[in-house]
Length: 111
Length: 114
Image (cartoon, rainbow over the protein chains, first blue to last red):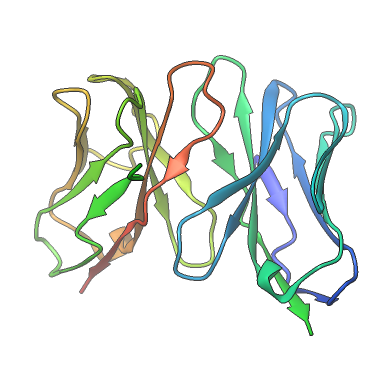
């Protein structure tokens, strides 16, 4: 079983709607959770991180963490065509510096 | 300031050749990571340095892979006797020490083994 699971998509969302991206993880020792955005042919760039249960908002982005369910999500409000990219979920365990990534979800915003 | 840089950006190797990939981290970043990203997959951890010390090399897929960071700044990932399955994008990332949250990624080196 892969440690970090994401639906590979593609996920198509109309412009202006809310895009919802989901991620589950298997290791209960996971401490920090990250969402990276990766445009085609480019390197990953950090959008948000979260380490406490609940919601964390930054502009149009909201990260949600539920440690009991081992579930983390990313909501993108007012989706724009420029949000079209692959979104990578990553986790970091306590005492460990490396990131473990999911396979990514490809998101397409339809104008 | 400058971000993480990697060279070469593209490398084509014949099977059996040795290759060396270079990473220049952000100045002052103590931690340096190498990841391998196959097509359509997420990055997979290879190895991690703190300064010149290689603290975790658990992700290196075989003893053909070797990484070094002798002076605690520039790092080189070497792959000996390349195989077709080594074809991937090799990403380098750096971060501030310890409590630093964000790993900043370089543009990657796309390696194609023929």
